[in-house]
Length: 317
Image 1 (cartoon, rainbow, N blue to C red):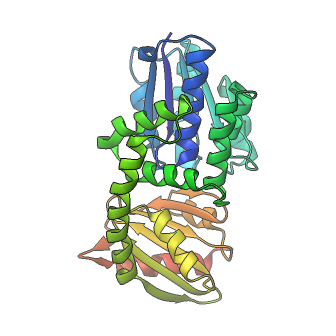
Image 2: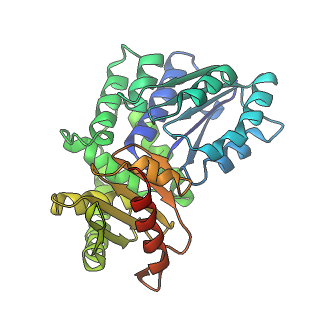
């Protein structure tokens, strides 16, 4: 039996979901590790990854999607889902992002299982479905919730989240799989994690200094002051640091110049609705999208900033 897992690559919720899935098939179904195939995606390349997995003659027997979210452009995948299900590929999707009821209904009609609960993180939903009584799965889910909902009660969870962010991108897939394997075995601390932590701290210090020097303030009519900055580090991490250091602003925008990706954090605007205008998505208080040439020659594209301000001002956010 061929099992394929596709998950969100940049956070502990996505990686933790995959670790629970791998643990289930290893210990409950006795599936060999060679038959479990791990893939990674972001909302910017989700459709491409789905097509790579399903647009082949050797489709998996079971295909499990976790922690990806949904935007309108994903609708073009529905016919592929239907074709794959009819050919014997069972598709499961576990998520916690906000999705319109009409889409939820369609997905539940197309797929073997579609579960979505925005009050939980994806790893909790996966744990409840596959391994509700397993102590290691419970711990993975607890740590995933802690980082995804911003509770930050567990230092070890924050450290693993940082290591996952540090290993973003296809060239680091081997490291992500190593993290999945370690978590699935209940190994949350070891020498490799320590080595990774030391490396990422040096990298973080350099990039956070860049983000601080690149920080700028913009004022949006009827909203207030918004902070925006960019560096070669996760956009969400930049936004989170801006918010922590300047808690009185209306919104915080981080830009990851490696991938032309933007993440906005805000309690004053509907971040998800804003992101959707740029073909992105996420949650009400945090969301993101991709925009080409968002930073040029070290400076944020003025045309983009004006477009962003305009979308916020004219939208009912």
